[in-house]
Image: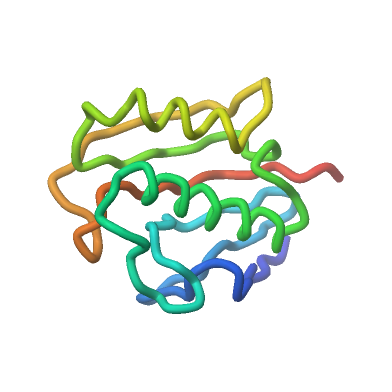
Length: 128
């Protein structure tokens, strides 16, 4: 199988040595998205809910560029600097996904790039 790079201007450009996503066969591996506004590459705000919405918008844009939607995500990893925001993540996530929801992990970590509060990556399976 060959791998191909997925890129869209509707999500933040990579800020390191990685691609927004890589497609291998029908599987797409999404790199972590943080709450950067693609046009400015700046953090949307300090508000957690606004950051979470922006991350889901960025993830959605990468899914779309790969030929799918968030509903094609089989696995999502959510990294939070404050696990007490978990209920907010659940409420916001429900606006971007339909049942059946993907498998998911939510982990509290000490810090994220650019001082943001949330990062999400995932694995998407596209129809053949």
